[in-house]
Amino acid sequence: MKQITILIVDDNFVARRGLRGVLQAETDLVVLGEASTGRSAVEWIKNRTVDVILMDVRMPDTDGIKATAEILKLRPETRVMMLTVMEEQPVILKALLAGAHGYLVYGRFTPEELIKAIHVVAAGGTIAVPPVAPALLENIRGYMDSTQSIQDIGSMEPLTARESEILTLIAIGRGNREIAEALEIEEKTVKNNINNIYSKLQLKSRYEAISYMFNKQV
Image 1 (tube, rainbow, N blue to C red):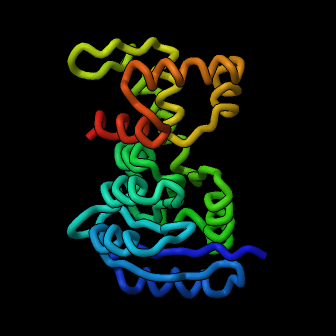
Image 2 (cartoon, rainbow, N blue to C red):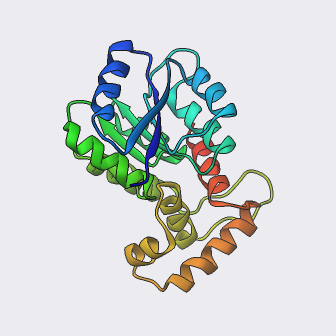
């Protein structure tokens, strides 16, 4: 059985100890380290790597959302899942736009659900447990309703409504097939639109697309 390596990032010592205790009971989960601030997590990841980072949102020095964006720039293969008490809709949206692959709210999941979520995220999936998912979808709908077409400052060519929809779905971690199913279009059409998005916004990767969306929201 392949082991999943983990970094726990939380400014609360008791929370870190509790998470470590839950995770150590699983033979395929290995906690390689802990960090108490977003900045210390970024420094930790510069010299080491893990499969999954469990990241708090509100921390001193550098918050979890900014740390997530920095870490994924350094280690794009790393998966980040937010574990927090914060369930405000703008916070959830910013975290996912920053590149987080999951968002769990304390008190809304059991230890068993946490373990399952870690496996889903480590395998390449994206997860948010209720009541986070409805809040996120409401935010995205509101964002899309208020933005007929996303365009960068200056002379860059604006995106079409369809391209804006696809860019938003990329930002919350959806793959090409998932986007095609959600919008009821061909996967080839999704790929063509993504190429247009990259060309118009001068982007080269999905991470740059996520960063672009995050920067427009902060």
